[in-house]
Structure formats: structure tokens, C-alpha cells
Length: 403
Ligand SMILES: *[C@@H]1O[C@H](CO)[C@@H](O)[C@H](O)[C@H]1NC(C)=O
Ligand SMILES: *[C@@H]1O[C@H](CO)[C@@H](O)[C@H](O)[C@H]1NC(C)=O
View 1 (tube, rainbow, N blue to C red):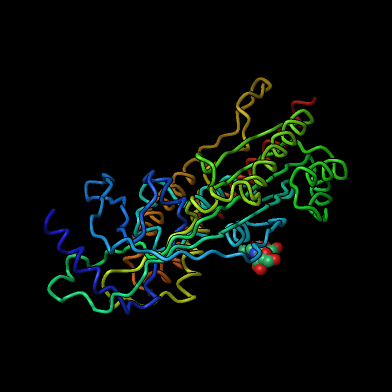
View 2 (view 1 turned 90 degrees about the horizontal axis):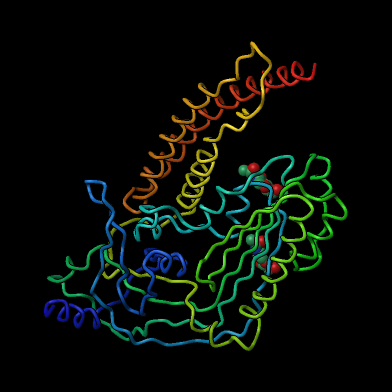
């Protein structure tokens, strides 16, 4: 304990001249989702660490870089965005993808994944599905650690804080995302819905118009991501015309809530109290390469691969409750199930690599993206082939049953 205090004291005087390239950026809600308590300025983050036994435990850190901060308030306009989203890549661009080094350093992937990746695995992109996304981000206040400590850490002490980071900056505000996925009975209806021009930042108004123009969606899924809500994410699913009414009611409530929290002046205190973004700096300078654009795109590529692999393990083409005419063999999912097992394993291996992303060299990262791209697309091709055959078989079966 006394030793830690000593170290903390020393750290107060040296933190500096650390290159920006080594900074870690993390959405604060991602951190709070796992560790429950927000971090204080200057403190060292907790981590979820996987041990050789496979166990994942929380490792706390008691070093501190001090807690003297400077606040700045911003009054600039924060743009709202809304868009039709047609693939997972675009979805990640839109909601923002967690930074690979930060997410793996904190250990987010040891318990699950970054929230936007978890969200993306739930969304289906097909000819019948249409997805619209609304995003509001607001950060009126930023606290930065006041950096008047000129000296570097004494060499004797640097190994105690090697590979450790402290919280240098906290952005306060909110992120609110509403995703509305509609599934239509035909691709024609879906095309009309996708062509709808959204001119109002109101998911309920737009959904209402789309249902009038294109037809009532067969299914609706609403996903909410809100850094200001306790649950962070929420998913609702609706069916048919009654579902449409329910969905509209729910979204209207949300819109009220979003306006109050994110834009409304009355809740200004709340907006400047809840952290939305964290920026960490390392205690000591390391020789690691700065993160380049290629590395960033390698991270995005492996994230997309994992989302794709995740979607591979569904065998939807066999209805087990269908009554078959006598003498008919039920179409089998066996081959597809075997392939899905394979896909699951590949995803598991990929996830393992992603979870130690911050330890990999730039070269390893680039290689990982291409190796797994090959592996996953080959399983994907086989699954597609099997699914096609199964569908053909089922079609034949449907014809037989009609007679
Ligand atoms: C995703 O959609 C966007 C916008 O339609 C398009 O520009 C992009 O090429 C697509 N990416 C992939 C990987 O399909
Ligand atoms: C959101 O809107 C702002 C301003 O209109 C724009 O600069 C930004 O690129 C948009 N972001 C996305 C992901 O479309």
C-alpha cells in the first residue's frame, strides 16, 4: 500500500511527452457496462484478464496519475445522423467501431464483444429486410488531466507501470442510437421501403410513412443503444399490423426520452455528469508502432469476419413441425450442422486472436485478416451450397404435399 502511494507520488511529476500514437480510445459506456463504476480522471483502468486456465478475472489497478483536471465546455452543434444501412460494414461505420487495442487491453472481448459488434450480429441484411439507423451524439463537456508535470518517470520505477494506462480525458454527454429493421413479405415492398426518402429525424414518422407506402412490414425489430440508460441496449420485436402499432408507440416514447436527455436544456446537468468517452495514455513510453490506417482496416475486417461467421450458424431452411406425406424423409440439416460447427470453431479462434489484438504486431494483424477471410469464406461457400440444395429439396417437397 505504502509502496503504491510512493509510486503514485512519483508518477504525478513525470507523466509527459508520451506520443499521441499510443493513446487508447474507448467508449465510456463500454467500460461501465463491464466494471459498473465510472473511472476517475488520472486513474488506471480495471481489466478483464484471461488466465492460462481459461478463467477470466477482473484485475484492478491502484496506480494513479493524480486527479487534477481541467474542464472545457463546448457549445458547438452536434450533428444528428440518419441513414439507410445496407450492410454490416456500413453499420459499423455509422455507429462507430470500438478501437481494437483499447477493447482488447481492457479485456472486453474476454466476456463478449464490443456493444456495436454485438448489435451488428442481430441485424439481417437481405432482399426482404430494410434497416434504418438514427444516431445522436452529444458531448458538451470534456475533462482533461492537467499536465504540468514536466519530468519523466525515474528509470528504476518504470517497470512497475510498464504496459499500464491512465485515464487522461473524459468526455461527458450521450450517445443515442435507434435502429429500425423492417422485414417485408416481398423484395418488391422492401425496395419501395428502401427508396423512401427520410426527411424528418423521427423514426416513428418515417416508419409510419414507410408502412403506408410500401406495405405493413411482416416483422419489425427495434434496437436501442443509449449511453444514458441503465441497460445500455434494448431489443424489441414486433409482428404484423398490431406489431406496427405497438412499435410506433414504443418508438414515440423513445423519441420523447431522447429529446429530453440529449437535447433538452432541463437535463443539462445529467449530460455533463455521465461519461461517454474515455481516452487513456500509457504511463511509460513503449516502442510499439503507432496504429496506422492499415491496422485500423485490419481490425474492421476481422470484426466483420466475426459478425459473418456468427451468422453462419443458423439452419433456417428446415421446418421441423411440417407434416410430411408418408414415405417422405425429412430433409436433413446434418451437413449444414457439421459446417456450422466448423464456422463456430473458426469464429472462436478468430475471437481469441481479436481479444489479444493489442499484443499483436502490425504484420500479424494484417495476416490475421487475410488468413481468416479465406477460412471463413470457404465455410461460407460450402454452407451456401448445402442450403441451396436443401431449399430445392424443400420446394419439391412442398409441391408434393400440395397434391
Ligand atoms: C456497404 O454499403 C455501402 C453503401 O451502400 C457501399 O458503399 C459499400 O461498398 C458496401 N460494402 C460492402 C462490403 O458491401
Ligand atoms: C454524420 O453527420 C455529420 C454532419 O452532417 C457528418 O459530418 C458525418 O460524416 C456523418 N456521419 C456518418 C457516419 O454518416
